[in-house]
Length: 339
Image (cartoon, rainbow, N blue to C red; front, side):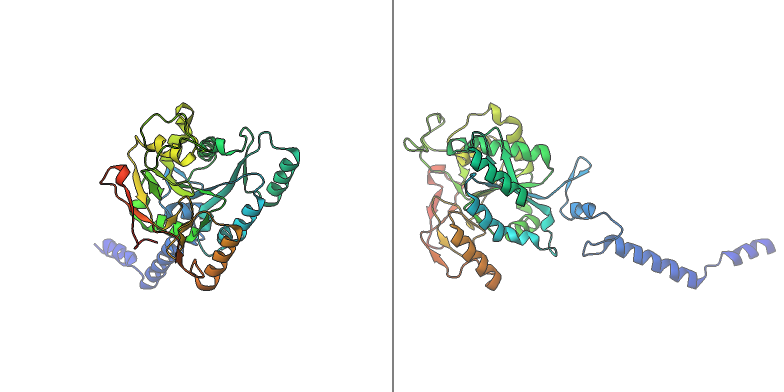
């Protein structure tokens, strides 16, 4: 009995030791789960992956958003303007822009030696060109360019969303990233996000003449090509199957036809100004197509000084909400309430 009491005495918890142990546990938990995600105990890659829920068969994804900017070899002015304007936001170290990777995509097959030399020099200086050696860069090859860059992205990167834009498109990349992170309907696996059109007649003449379209009198609903986003699964679907598909002149029309049979979440967003010409300038816009280098510089300067896209808002013509409850030929009624 005396022996048992002695054991109890020695097993008594020392309050000072208990306090020290508790403090150590609290510090460890804080360092591991600290809210600003700069834990010294976890690899940075792990933090960034969990922040966005990026898991793929047990592997962490290499990035979150892949931005593909379709360009032509001679459009160095446009590329340099984009680097100086909306892409310059990616240099900020206090925001999660490391979750974005971007490339300017062009074909180099049959390119004159002087142009090829200039492209190589630009690549050496910037390292952000995706050069498709087997593709001759021309309007007729835009669909193939889309397919090849999807194929390249899937083979070389793990990501969650791909954004395709043209080199005359200005993007509020901070707004795009924020939308993808906070809006649950924009983080689904089958996301197809852009500015849709469903009543475009099949082109019968001009450079966009479609001789192979046999489906119907109208193009199938598609997101306009100035800028749209695709979930990884859709990019993977295109990358794996495009060589079996019929291709058409317009890359955005082709993509709409390729994805039409799939279960999609089509998100029509009036903040995408991506029609055949610009609808003007609204501070609501997050994607603006048909922009000159000067337009981009003006928008960038306005954002830096006021956080607004436009020095002066104006409307050239009205936009529309896509009505998914009616036939595509009745989809798109313009409204004076939509800039």
